[in-house]
Structure formats: C-alpha cells, structure tokens
Amino acid sequence: MKSTEFITEGVDQLVADFQEIADEFNHHVTDGDSIPSAPDTSKFRAARGGMIEVARNLQVAGGQYGMDRQFLVAIKVGGGIDNEVHTEIERYVKHVLNNVTSDTLRFIKTTGTNWSAYGLGK
Image 1 (cartoon, rainbow, N blue to C red):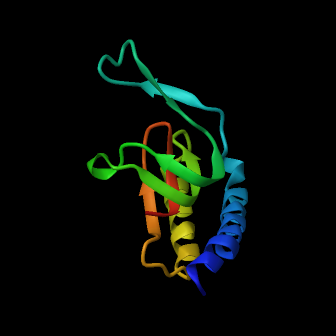
Image 2 (image 1 turned 90 degrees about the vertical axis):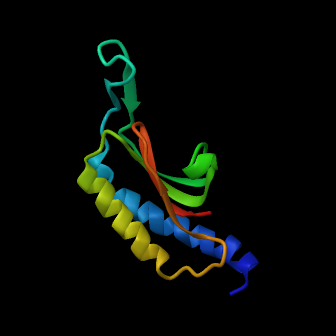
C-alpha cells in the first residue's frame, strides 16, 4: 500500500477502529474534576477530564525534549478515569496498530493530569 493510500483509506479505518475502542469503554466516562496542584496544594487545583474520545491530527505541545507530539489518530482519555482503563485502552490501541507499518509513523502516547492520548503519530 502506498503511503498516500494509507493516509486516505487507512486513517479512516483507524478512526473507525479507535471509535470502537472508545465506545467499548464509554461507560467509564465521568464528569471532570480537579485535584490539588503545585506550587501550593492548598490554593491551586489541576483539572482532570473525564472523557474518552477519538481525535484526528492532534498536536500536543511540550513532548519529550520540548518537541511537540503529533498524532495522526489518537484516543484521548481523561485523567479522571481509572488507571486500569488507561492501561487497557493503551493495550487495545497497540493491538490495532500492530498491522500498521510505516517508516515515519508509530505508536506514541502522552500523559498528563487533564488527559492522556494514545495513538499513531510521530
């Protein structure tokens, strides 16, 4: 498959596959909340999302070594959702991406207080 064919047909299929994963875990969706945050945990709070959603062309600033993370397709999972769910979603995403071969794209993730993302990117 040529890379242009993958971009047009493969991404649509990945979005559908990721949406199936998101739908399977949809019952874990919660309202967002907040937790104590630095520099003064008695005064500051950090938001935690409660969503599970598919995103295309997601760019996350400040990745490893200050470089942006660019996801072609990703599942965003809120920080308010249990860690076990994050682990399961990551496992499912890796399984779906086992069939994707690319010299420039690979499984990547980013984690944070508000939300984390797991998907295909560079």
